[in-house]
Structure formats: C-alpha cells, structure tokens
Amino acid sequence: MSKQDNFQERYLISLDKSDGGLIIRKILESPNNLAIDIIKVLFSNNFEKIKLDLDSIKKFVAGISRADSFSKSYRLANYYGYLFSFHQYFHSSYRARQGKALEALLNQILRECGDNFFVADKTNEKIKLIKELFPKMKSKLDLDAVCRKNTKSYLTVQLRSRDDTGGTTAKGSLVDFLRKSFDWKKNSRKKLLYLVTIWDAIDSNQKKITKSKIYENLKHIIGKQYSEKKFIDSVEQGIKVRDGVVLKMVYGTEDLAKTLGGWAKPEAKIDFHTINKMIKKVESWDDLWLSYAMVSLELDNQKIAGFSNAELLKKYISKDDIKTIIESDNQVLSANKIALKIAPSWKENSIPANSLSEKIHYIRDLILLRCIYEIS
Image (cartoon, rainbow, N blue to C red):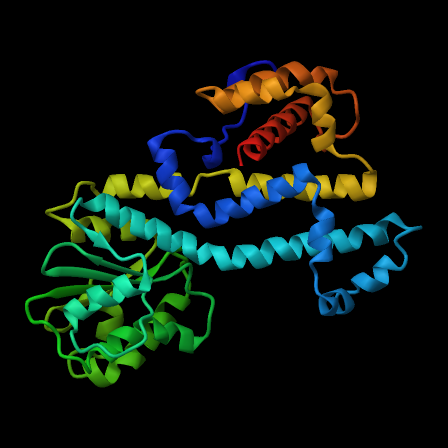
C-alpha cells in the first residue's frame, strides 16, 4: 500500500477546523464528548479508574469480585473486571446521549432554515413559545423541539429514533401534549404544525400500530372527523385536528427534510436538498465508532497480551509529528503520510491486522486519536 487514494476516508469532527465542523460538533457535542472521554482513557491509561468507580453491587452481581480473587494467577480473570466496567461505562453513557444528538440536529436544521426563526433550546423558552399559542397552557411540557417561524407560524416536534421499540403506551404518548392542548383556548391568529417524527424509516408493521395508538389517544376528540382507517391513511400527509393545528407523521430523514423545507417556506434560506445533505453529513462522522472499537481492542491488548499500541506509538512518532498533523489543513492526509512512513519499521507483532493495508490503517487511525487526545 503506497498511494494516498488507497486509504479509507475518515471524518473526525474533533479535528475539523471549518465552520461546518463547528456546527456539527455542536450538534454531536454529547456523543462526541463520550468519544473524547474514552480516547483520554486510552492514552492516559485510566482503565483502572473506571473499574474502581463500579459500585459494590455491580461487582457482586456481575461476578467481578469473584473474578478478581483469581486475577493474580489468571490473566483472563484479571481482564474481566476491566472488560465489564469499560463497556458498562460506555453503554450507560451512550444511552443518555443519543436522544440529545437527534434533538440538537433538529434544532440546528431549524436555525439554518431562517435568520428570524426562533428555536427554543431550554424548557422555559419552549414554554414561552407554546404560551403564545395557548396562553392558558397548564401542563408539563414534553416536546423535543419548538420553533417559531414568524408571528403566526409555529412548529413542534415529538422525535423518536424508531418505532419498533417501546410499548403501546409509549406510542400513544407521542400526542399527549396535543391531546391536552384541546383543553386550552388557542390564539386564533396563530398556526401550529405538530410533527411526530420517526428517524429510522423501518418498513414494519409497527408503523400501523403506532398510528393506531395515536388515533386511540385522540379518538374522543377527532373521532367524528376521522375514522381510524382514514386517520391511518392520511396522517402522513397531515390532517387538521382543530382550527390552525395540523398533525403530521414523518417517517425517515428524507421525509423529515422535505417537511421542514416545505414548512419553512417562503422564509427558508435552505431547501430540502441542503437539509438532507446536512443530515447525511452528521451521519458520516467517525469519532465515536473509531474510538470505541480501538479503545476496546487496546484494552484487550493491555490486559491479555500485555502491551499497548498507544504506548508503542511513542517509539515511532514524535510530539513534533503530532503537532504538525494537528496544525495541517488536512490532518487525515498528514496522518496517512506518517503511517505509510512508520508502518514498515513497526516490528512488534501488536497490530490486529490481517494485511499490510489493515496495519497501516490501524496505525493511521491510532495517530488520529492521539491528535484528538492532544487537543482535548
């Protein structure tokens, strides 16, 4: 492997200096912070701290205390506590962050739609906007996004990553706020588009079930206007549920992009294609999967094989090399060049690779994670 164009692409938002990179870092701030955290664990060798942070109940129930009793004479037993604690730390942290990323992306898209659009980030801002629609609102607010396009047009969004998870109660709850709003007098001069958005457009029976549960939750209000069949057939096009209020279900990112682009007109600065491109760009980042996969492998190396490629890297690359990569206009290209240079001299049989190409890629990716560590 000798040519730059033989390398896989990498897009690491932590290293992107552009204005677009700044926007994407804001959108993915929460999961990207997790990526940075585990990169720090690797290069600071803090696996021990994560293990020590486990509470005694987890150590007992998961068998860690028992494994530790054999750890001095059995490497596998020693490894188990680190394995469990690291992956438990990662997944518990990730679960709390994934929903925030979707909300942040949605809010950023709405901001990009128009200079005068007001996108509510905080709960008190959401309440303020909703009270412009329903001045007598008395309810706990559970909406993922609230936006005002102008003095007359508003958008609210209930967002789910997919609809094949959660029970029937959770599906029906997607319109809880809308159902409660019928008890409040609405400002007649203002209009609301209430979006129920499913991020992943999975072709399954769950779509019909979700629609049925939503209809069941609203039947006592809209039953005279819509039969269940008519509701199921029409809700993806949008249905009027009261004066100035339209309910619409959106499945998948392309449908979401089209809906947001249409709602934002005529004030919109960006169209469907731009919104869709923004979504695809956010979906193409490499920081989290790369750091999690590599740190997991390096944990195995440390505790089972007894070496660390993060430490070995220091033999082959200087701090000045790292600084040069960080300061370059194209860090990935610079890392490619250095990986090609040092791979032949990396004599330790420590890289988990089946080919020279994989070895060079692994070294390149390790270098890039080291760069993120140095700037974080």
